[in-house]
Length: 120
Image (tube, rainbow, N blue to C red; front, side, top):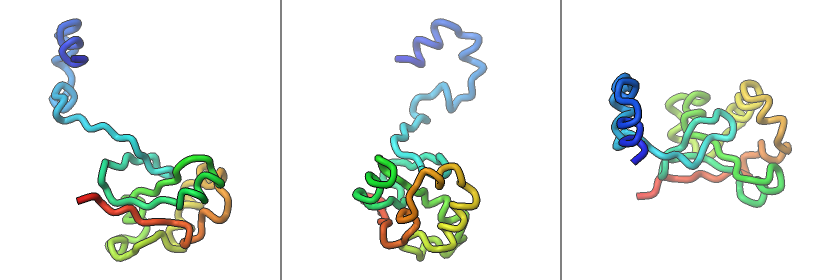
């Protein structure tokens, strides 16, 4: 509806938009984002999260890490890792200092993380 309304209200401007924007079938709604990088996490996509009780205590809401960040840190071996490792935590603290400063130290303990696998 929104796209049709925009096309009717201002056709010349609407036509200048890339086809991916004009076609609603190309759109995807994201409701989960990596706490550190801000990258979107698609529904059913593999990612990592701090256990609920620790996350609520440490930050008050979910703390999620995208698999893309794990791949950036660990390369191809990220597929073999079940949880973030020390290398990942060092990377997060170095490159996402503002986000990490909001968290308690127990967030950076591997035992407090869970792997969230894609739903099949």
